[in-house]
Image (tube, rainbow, N blue to C red):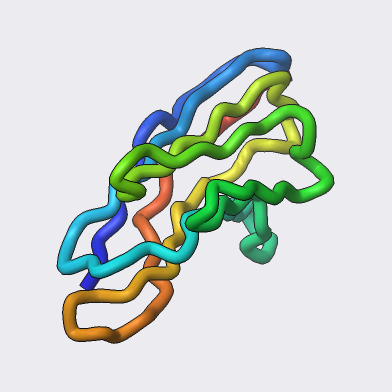
Length: 120
């Protein structure tokens, strides 16, 4: 199956920036999309950003204009540049991919998450 590893989380003051990275590995035939979700304590996991195979990005309204998602060739890595961070951005950020493996099975996979903490 596909494995995802996130990195780049940490602590930052409000107004600061962080860059998250997600690396995909395993028996990957193709990746349809890679995205980022986040979950604050006591809250449901919510959509943050996604980028498709044609490099078209979409963002949640709460981060639009502040966050930028990108993919690296051969489309096995995704990055999330987070600028102008706010305390309400504090959450565990999870990478997600929709991919087809070498046995032709398509599935959604999740990373373990990386903590982002924004102080006021």
